[in-house]
Image (tube, rainbow, N blue to C red; front, side, top):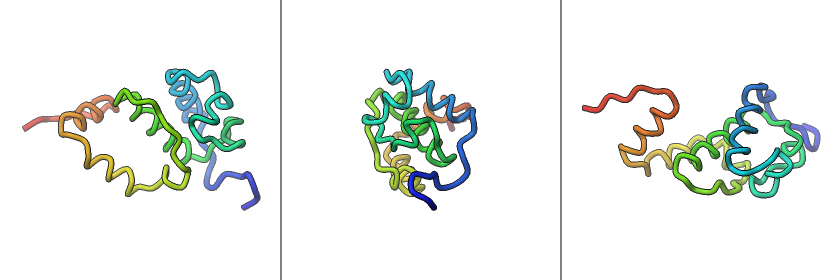
Length: 111
């Protein structure tokens, strides 16, 4: 892989639009404006993401929005780690998990 190129298939236009919308909700004007706070590379600041990168940043921003926290930069090597996501899910209470699932369009049935 050449320097500065993404690893994996490119993000869909829908993913890029969703990511930009979430960045605007977080107070950024565009990808370049969010470069430092989000830890974007130069390529990402130009709006070019791999599918997994975009999904990880979208999840990060949605989680920050859900919890009311300010999104912080996370090293790219950790963003795509499935195990990290599972660890974070284990820390949620049942009520928080149900709210997050409902927000993402799932139906939650309580016993």
